[in-house]
Length: 68
Image (cartoon, rainbow, N blue to C red; front, side):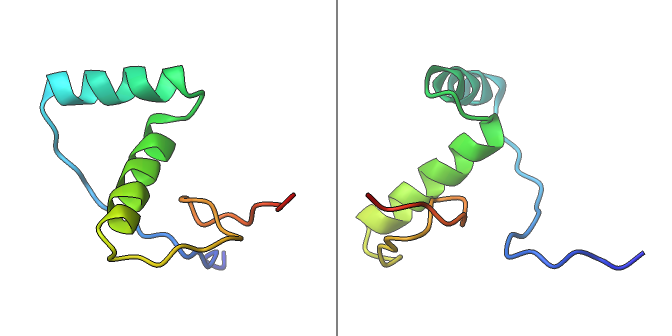
């Protein structure tokens, strides 16, 4: 079976239980998966620190977003 190409990379992340619980609650509050919330948090931190340029047509998860 051919491997599907993707622009995302997988890795293991270890966080303490209290941090994970807070992330899961935050994700639920914003109707996101825990993984999606972590991607959003990281993308926002990178943008705010100036380490990642803003991209109008991509979401923090790298998906194309329709502009109004």
